[in-house]
Image (tube, rainbow over all chains, first blue to last red; front, top):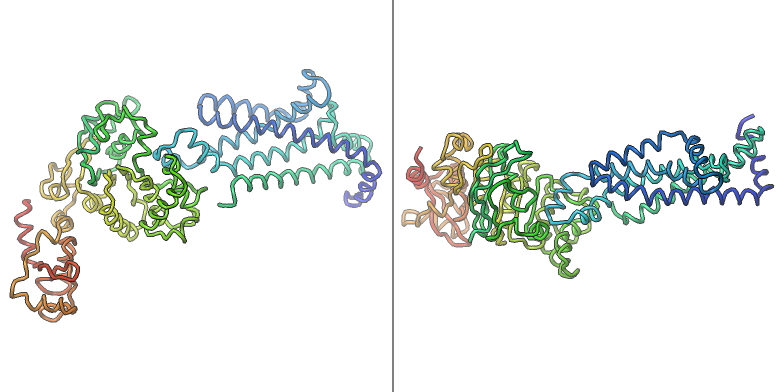
Length: 216
Length: 335
């Protein structure tokens, strides 16, 4: 029996447990939005610093890469002995995992701005801060936002694992549904997550368009 | 007064690579000096020492009589226009915003900036209504370089540095932009330092030419003197075998024309009647006193005649004859 055939039952399951669903969705949203927001707040400035200091660049990108190579489950498992169970450790795990795509894209975005553009800007008497604010950041905005969007979509998926350390979220339905062979329950937990990922991606695309003005 | 002065300037990169050695020259205010030489000769390095994108290893560069090391580099650069071959337009800003960059950095008020942007786009033959709000990626190479020049002139700098500004353009566009720029140059009173690897461009654009061999300034002189008295074998080779023709290019009609004597009555009358005709009735295009002798000679040959009239406005001011051009060359240059 295909997944498609299960959809009506999944829908029925969701309607039946509406209250529970809203609680789980809220938890999931909180995890994703807070961790993503913090990741942006940390990764973009860190990426900028990395492009200014060659020594720092290696260290920062190295750490970011290491963070990404740890399997998602392992991050959750690693955070657990340190911070225990619940919302906060889940948040930390997701935050660490969300950093790298934003960090690498910030660095490459800024470094990929044409050398001649930078030379012209310096030659016209812009200070380093002005070059960054007026030239490098606006020109690398699409690349930085591509990183944020990737990170956000992955984050929605990773947040399902928060269930393992008591962080709640839609993972509760998906994972217990798998254990119980309850396909409608799995779908009722998984499909909203997919829709959430798509809407976050679209949301960031809109913010990007707003930030870059109507042009280009 | 000299606007820019190099006093025994040496620039060494990484303590090993000598870019230029012991270079000295002065650039008079309001003139155009062209730094020319093969690639890797240090001409671009020399130019970037002026706006402190590079610092000299030894010696001193003076800007309006002051050692540039004593000036704030940011302030200095805002008072010096800068045009590079790659142009380096800011693709996320409109043409108008690009041109407004330095006035904006200098904190001009919005109305003054708007007026200045329109004035410059007008000057560069880019009607503001059509171009001000376009983005650079939608422009052609020639248009982009016009925006680049307009942007460099925006805050009315005393000095303009141009690094192979027309180098990436196709020959026809390049030629047009050179002519237009010569025209603009006569309207503004800016001191220009111009870098190129093309001796033709140097002869055409420069009041003075500085010829560089690997790291060394080998001759600094007027285009005419460079052609007449090349100082070394290198300069001679660099100019090429057609020195004589190149000299025609840098000599003005003004220098060789003579008053129209009675024997040229017919010629003068035909021009004043609005129907210039050669003695044998062939088509004839008059020259102006500021045209090059090369242009005059080419028209003489084309009209299959021995003399053409020189016209300034509506008046015939003289004639240029083939023999006058030959005589001038014979007296001027010694080979």
